[in-house]
Length: 541
Image: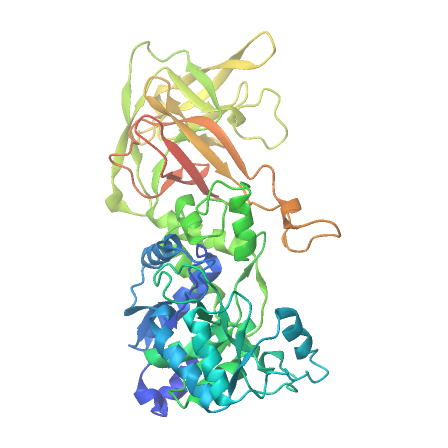
């Protein structure tokens, strides 16, 4: 049981909140969700499910300059893909009128005032944590004047930045967030839902607690950076004498070889370091989905790392382990040759073919088998043959024997090279009595390699992805560097490989294991005429 569950269970035992649990996931629609958000989604929706409660989806759309319907749609899709469904969908903009009325109430209580100071002046007034701030010259404006100017702000009489509404709290507080924080700013910008109805917009710290209160949220679960904001969260709901949710903070997800900053992720997209927000190298949920991560693997990862009170960095290999564990159970097996060289079986009859049975998934007997055509010429991986092998190289070499998976044991006899010395063909003999499943199939060899028939295969573009950054902490840049200097130039390699002819868009499974290679999925840009596969993760770390 994690510490948040302990808090909730104690609340339930004490009959707090009428023994109900109501959480929410409140993203700002200014970008695509990433793996860190996935942890928060699993936590909020998971708690609601565990305690027979509810979980809302609320879009924190209080900044029209950065928000867009595209992001709203992508957030909905990501949450549902992860396997969750919200109980109510809301927007902070639903509450703009109520938030405005409450702001006027705080003015009447002499707990808020309109300030004509510039941003620079307000910053200087706040000072530093070890010294008290300086009160604004507008702090003691009268109630009627404040109401008049605030209403004129709403009416659009003033330009952007001319005035703000500030809460009147404590300019000597050691918590900088309590030094008369800004509640409203002027923004003449079109809102994705409200159009041009509003030209003043509430700040997050003002809108968040009140939105939680309106929706009846019992446990407002935030990441650790909002811990210093909690006194302000409490101050607003107490000053307004409205329902008081409980804010609880947990450590955000930090992942090695990854960045989580929306601003930096936006730079990667806008400056074309990646293809798009759903580039398979991105830590976005849409990127992980396109790369072939399963929803279950991400949920398993969130459960494995748990909920902590202190920030730490999780090794990305744990996420990769979780996807391997899940895909091993569900991925359809298939053979693919990504760097082909031709292997000719000299003693196999010309123009003869036989169907070889191959298992679709040894972890799932119900997945059945498939047929692969076997003949005189097959493709194998170039790396599975060495003419002059090092010690402990157990794959194919001249005079050596290996098993062709599901088929026969072969013995290498010779190679044919071109004028540059590159191997063109490998010539072998096969042992007819060693067919897999046959009476003599138990003969032992030290290696089994995969293959594809030259006469019956398909070409495919295969995108081999590696980590986007080549250092564990891309944010730790040396002087004069940025996170962009740590981008791995080999994070994507594109090869033309061969796949089993049975694989096509009409009967595709969501996830595939290219035997002996790794897990792959079909990319969204794939067509029947041009198949594209993305590498999800290798078979081993």
